[in-house]
Image: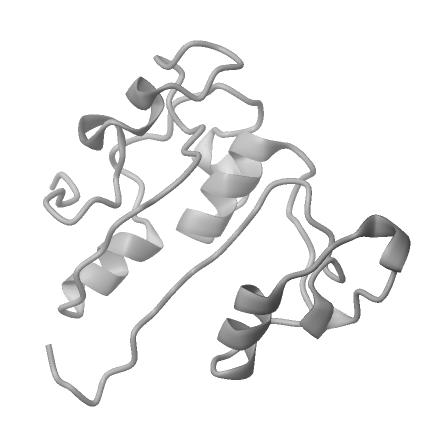
Length: 138
């Protein structure tokens, strides 16, 4: 990959409002929230400041963020559903442009994982579509 291309770090979290980080205006000292590392990342990068969630449910929202498609289009309209391996994700697009990709953290897009639990099985490489050695099926 060319040295002039930027690194991409795509962070999304559950149960986090748009203003929960200090760099986004969090000043409520009673909430005891401090986000110095995220604030540093935001200062040196690009921050999306005008956005909304497609749906207030974890699995469909994650699928939407990764695919850019609405929940009813992907079939991901409830929690604990399986994202189709035919879906093209942001990782596939980045990989096609020569980027190495990885996913770290809560996956929640595989119904085979124990319901309500985020076990190691929920993030096993064979159950994800964004790990660096996975290519989209033709």
